[in-house]
Image 1: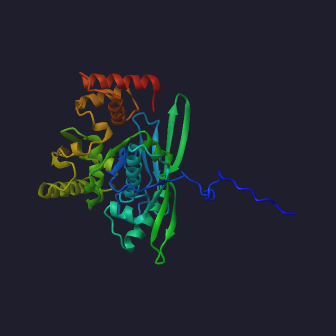
Image 2 (image 1 turned 90 degrees about the vertical axis):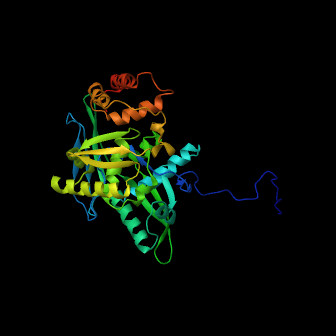
Length: 350
């Protein structure tokens, strides 16, 4: 019996693509501006130590009911330099979102491109350092509770859920990596809760310089100047130094900045145990989303906002408020306080 072979003129000459598509985002935007998430700027989650840091860190709000704990693995806490991996992924995803592209919390990147973009060495040391960074990022756990009414929700998660080396060269150097970001990081990206960082951030040598810049970027923003006490700055940095040693370290940074103007975006000065950050005016070239409407709030306004919206991070609220506006209000301070009141009335404590 001869079987008749029928021709399907509508059938594609190509076999079906049996590989899964759209389950990861490819990092291939070479001019993406560096961006950091505000969530990890709020607390000193990343260690400043160059040696394995096994301290457990705990932060509480003013009521003591809501807390956040950062717990290390056997390899120690993720460091401020490990954060470069997150910055690279966030920068790529934000650039894609701004172009209307589809993104995913699983990202595929080329190790060489990431090392180059973050000003790291591309020799064997650079690749080994990247492996170690991925290990610490996955091992560092964050535990936090969210209280709404009488219900408490406990969340425990790693900074990144997993990392996988897709291809390696014969000499052991990685070529492609897949990283699955945690919901915590990806939710911040989707909510545009990110800030643009100066490219010279990756050129800062000292971990403390990087952390101080992050704090200035988050809290000073586009203001002409912002001040913070040495004690409060040390707590925000997560420094384990004695107060006397921390002051010496800050003095060294201040002295170098006076001589070289090396700190990005903000000059750093120390006056009577108060650290002053003075805007250099360089942010206008690459504004963050929340900086597009450029007016400044009175420093007392943030204190009033904390009273009308207890438990909330007023800087996160300010960012949300600025994104929500379509034009500058006549009285920005009163408008912001009104916005905070409405947030608290509708959402309660965070």
